[in-house]
Length: 516
Image (cartoon, rainbow, N blue to C red):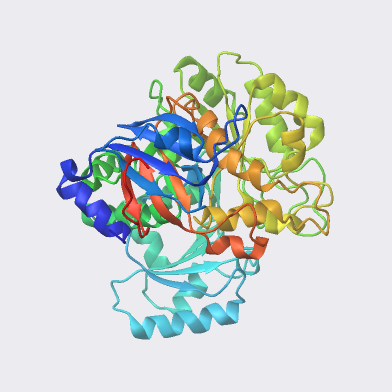
């Protein structure tokens, strides 16, 4: 089979047809991510597990008449990518306008005017915007009403932090003009103290949750299946998901979708406020430097906020609840002030195991001892590296320094899904000419596989290609350890295996005997 959709549908409709089998992969360049044996030539799989890793001759000798023998012809094999930070489940229908990272208000006005003419009155219109719009207090629901009268319009910051609703959108999402600021978030207001459509953090997240819930089950299922197809094509075998819809609805619709990806559900938004024993939980403690809501210990170079702001005055109730309920804790913390406060609070609760700092973009080296003391895992997002200049000098994620200090890191996309685009961002840092914090290619893949497995307490079953581990791996279209950095984003998986089953194939196999 050549296409992921065919493989996935076969698995859905005829589960026995793609049952795990005995497979050997020979004549390859196998990067195992196992420090005890980082490279090999061949892999043997029996059922759901890897049974042997070694030379082609060693592995070929284990094949029999029923074994599927795949000659890799020198291709690179890696453990299945584990994306530690993804956001599926935002599948509500909308007419989307992407005008670039930071469109001007005049461009947004023109695009909205055209969209109004092209779409029915019942359709939502979503425009992706950046700091030029979010930092402009004069762009409000009233202004959107002038441009798109009566229409359901969302101007949504591309970072996911900051949003402006039209009057009709406010009504549809239950945002009252006299609404109070919720815990962890706030509204901008007019001179009469009424909500003017501009919303931030948990004020926005509540509206985002209501918007996501407008999707039908069928739309969500289609969204998951498309997401899975894209992921499998990149060799992604596991995702750690923070969905747009509620945890309960995500679980039920995901089960109906029957995608082959391994999915770890993480509770956040309003779900995080209700304790659930043993289930991972995430809290968002600040914004990003793009809208200058990441909380820093120094002042921003310019801008309306001197040093950003933290969403919560006291996070200890959240941390304590996670410790008492045995919930793995994830804290979105971007600015160094927020990270310091998070680590100091976590340090009071030694029962917490492997707490995670999501993003950690502003992490500073003086906080490394706290990272080590708490056992925290730093989940990096390489697509963020390109926006280093949004921080003042010296305020940026020291990825390479974390590795050199022996501190655990994982990688999640939180943006473009393509892991090889993110790999390019990781190995070619845009830090005002400073490459000292660039990761090597091997370090990037380790963080994306073994590191991400460690972040979800699964390193004993996946994340490396070694005997006894789950047979999750990807055969790549090109040698990611040798091609130019700018060629990395073109990489795909020609063969993706999960649980010993081929779930994506674009590989032209040549018939070969089991033994020669």
